[in-house]
Image 1 (cartoon, rainbow, N blue to C red):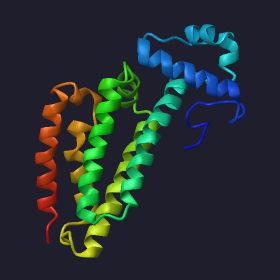
Image 2: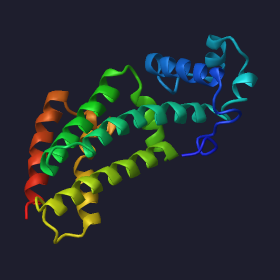
Image 3: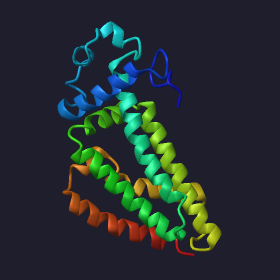
Image 4: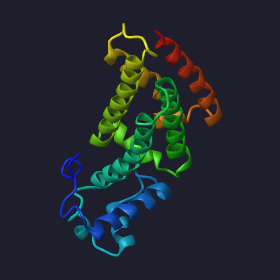
Amino acid sequence: MSASTLGQRGPTEHHRREQIIEQANAHFRLYGYRKTSVASLAKSIGVSSAYLYRFFDSKQAIGQAICHSVLNGMHVQLQQIVEGDLPPIERLRHFIETACNLSLELFLREGRMQEVVIEALQNNWATVNQHREDLLTQITALVRAGRESGDFERRTPLDEVVQGILFALTACLHPILLEIHPPEKTRQGLLVVTQLILRSLMP
């Protein structure tokens, strides 16, 4: 995903850009995305709003940078599972469990960070669309590995299986849905969903 797509300007590598992102991250966690203004960020860093706009074209662009950083961190951890040495069934099980735990950690325990992700979802930011594509790619790799090893059935079109798995996991990946039930109940429900998914994939 290019910097211009995320609304970023100026040199990619610059200590001020990193400082802005770091300060915005702290503000979003403490005050929430909606109550954080470009002016308050600029003041906390010790620069003018005009200077801040040399690196980001809007508050949304700053939010996208934070969202991209957070979701990419999740992607990296999940990719390690996809490329791991466990059998496909165990990799898929571990992938689902980890995706849920990372979402719970981010959306329920990281201050008010869920606000920026909710904003991204509601306004269809490029970062969340990329995150969804990343998840689809990772699940596809896991299901394909299971089919090649003979652990998973091959009758159902691959794209239908992958879309179905991601849709089934929505309850533990969406910040608003995660607030409906206590974390422990979400994890219990996820165990049931995981078993249903794995049984449906049996040859």
